[in-house]
Image (cartoon, rainbow, N blue to C red; front, side, top):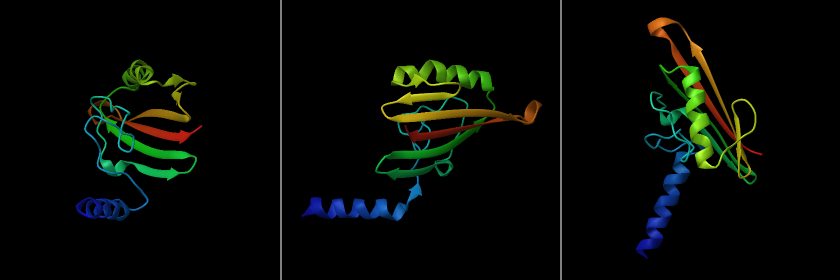
Length: 125
């Protein structure tokens, strides 16, 4: 009986989160993608992710920002993603187990005010 109540309460919490919302971000990971590391120097609030689960797979759009150069971001993900099973599929694109990942980084501003915005898009293949 206790297990059934606990399961029902958990289900209600998930429903209350509403469609298209990501749960809290795990430290060190891209919000909405629990197994995609967030590069040190980048920050991403949990609200930066939009998550859709559909029968054909999940769609996640997330963002992060920080005072990190675009070349460093490319180098980090080029080194890290193959260790997690991702295969290169073009510039800034990766594929793994029926999913594709696109990472784009754009630098905005100059000097001390410069920040890089990184966009992560995960979709079914």
